[in-house]
Length: 408
Image 1 (tube, rainbow, N blue to C red):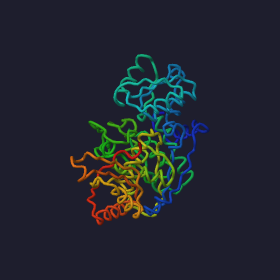
Image 2: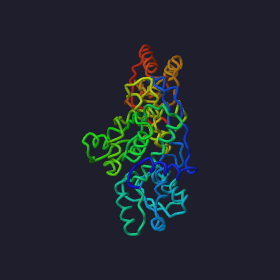
Image 3: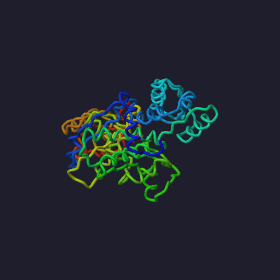
Image 4: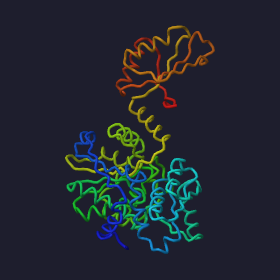
């Protein structure tokens, strides 16, 4: 079909019936109390392949002609789109080739292979993989499945709006992450068709705000670089086919700093026991920036595909940011009992020591001083300050230092 229409979305919904999961809304006591709104999450991180991308990929493949199908599929992706196309091809019993950057984490490569796709590692980033996939499509006759700049793909992603408004018809605001525009074009267009007064808020990282700039200018803008930990939305140029729908139907685009995603990761994990990737956390972090009260808000958790190394890093940085893990350095005479004094003070203040590092070579004269670095678990910044204050009160010259890796 040539345009995103209600009929187009209904066709996508019909094609996806019985194929994808209908992810139910998750009400959040924590974020509702924090913001003064009725906040729910649409957990597409629990979708097949761990992200919403299967919706658009499956519908796109379903719409291909028999001639397009028989030549096989090809896509370029570092993660969610790769897995979506791979699974869609498997469901349709088609061959799929996925070009992924050579830097793609092994877990994502293996997940894509597990759906039966042939994976080619090429280049340092998405742009290199995309160019190579286009060359192979031309050489081999493969049918290229674009991750976002395709109206069938966007219609598939848009079916999320059917589910949100069927479960909660009086939703006032939908918040969603924006990358190239496929998701935001689909969800915003369908949501406005079903409920014209609904408000759609898109969210981008400040280091990859190509859609924000494009909407400000009223035409496509390209970034020289996309610098963000939210790799799922690190797009330099939005899609030209989906851009008009975003421009028309997305009411506002917020920009979020990467550091805010770290706190959001901890909140979602601790309060809801959900693993959400950085791109999906944009719609969580945005909640703190809305100047509204008493509204029914749905934040879309777009995906949850994150390797364990990245998860460990986010947890560590989040704990440090909140003062729940910190390290202090203190110089002690090299004699028995000094370490015990430190441990006693920390224990009395209810701090939990998780690492000790003892450096006897900080000075030539060990009798004068050795360095002790202590990494602690605390309740937050106030507790951290209380522990440091008590150590200083007892005569120790302590200073805060950057913690080394907490989990190793």
